Amino acid sequence: MTDKLQPFPKNFLWGGAIAANQAEGGWQAGGKGPDIADVLPHGIMHGPDAQVEPGVHYPSHEAIDFYHRHTADLQLMAGMGFNAFRLSIAWSRIFPTGEETEPNEAGLKFYDDLFQEMRSLGMEPIVTISHYETPLNLATKYGGWTSKKLIPLYLRYAKVLFERFGQYVHYWLTFNELNGVHLIPWAAGAFLPHGTESERLSQIYQASHNMFVATAATIKMAREIVPDAQVGIMLTMSNAAAYPATPKPADVFHTLTYQRRTFLYGDVELRGHYPKYFDRIVRDYDLHLDITPAELQLIADYTADYLAFSYYRTTTFTAGMKILGDTGGLTGKKNPYLPTSAWGWQIDPEGLRYVLNILADRYEKPLMIVENGLGVADEVGPDGRIHDTERMRYLVDHLKAVQEAITDGCDVLGYTWWGPIDIVSAGTGEMKKRYGFIYVDKDNEGRGDLHRRKKDSYALYRDIIQSNGALLDQPTEALVKHYTTASTTVSAE
Image (cartoon, rainbow, N blue to C red; front, side):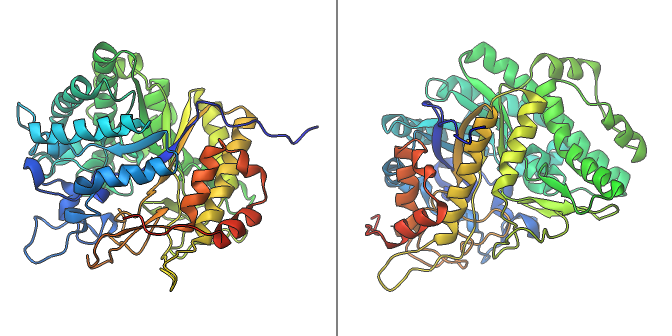
């Protein structure tokens, strides 16, 4: 037996990922309309205001001002050797209310310039069509994705993107973390469930189905307009990394039911049909859904080309536990064998290998890790440096797990670290919860000059990419120590 690992593929996509609503700012610039993130003063987990209220600080309105600073920021990404960069297009920059018949040219021009810059720097754009940025008008007027009226509006938007940006973009994702609609329905589905448990779940599964239909129709359209493009789906898979808290059979099966709530979304969009276990969900909760034979045929005919996913943590479950969670996934019992971050997220690199293997076995499609990262309250030291040792350890250990999965036989296309530059936290609206290799001078109240500064992890990720992962052969602690003590340039502007 040998423990030699397979190298990362030569064409492996190395990069980072952001979302428009957490990075761009410029919430009214160039004719942009308000979206569902623009009425969140304290992030997804605290709920929206009915409208933008005067005098209230909304983090998305300025975010980190990527809208005006993207040229310099992309240069910083290129400095790490990125050959890929995942970002989203703000729907309301293109169609401010979501209902216009003609797109907003200023918004299109912004992304034209952005993609051209990325291409000139050797970066493959990985573009999410809708990442928690549904136009606010569609949420308030129609109840978001609970209404089938959003399907043709989304398809009009996607068609414009394919026709305008198809020459630059080869990797598309239809929705961000579609299965997050259970835990964060306002962000993932642009609606707030109400009524009895049966009514709330009917709304959640109807919204899910409507997005399944939109995804299938988008894939059909892409194959006609941009036939060389790859259209994938993006799901949160922290929820799939669920362990039974004990070997008790009831705990084992209870954990499976939680995992199935995640697998349902991949089963429909990658296998092309609703699984049989969904029939029992419909019966048990007396769901009332509008699903037509024509829609089911469309879903069967147009499955996704690849599965992109987020992975942050794992958790454990016991029978009868109430379902709780946040933007990181479901939250069960604390695992005594794992360390925990300052925000309560348990750190489990082996869980990423576990998830990759489960997904590879179940779907037999290419996989892409498009969100993985650690939020830390970084501090700038007296010498101007930021020693983010926790982040470096997390990065190295999770990439080692990816390499193990590749050696296991998983087809992994790429890895994009979540938030390579500090951005607004989706869950809480904080800036204090920082993910980046690049520090942004801004606090939770919006104070700061937005100056960019490299952290120790910047050089580490740069060298990992430059070596195509070969650097990971070294012990984790040796790498962390080296990049903490090595001389580095901190100022990025």
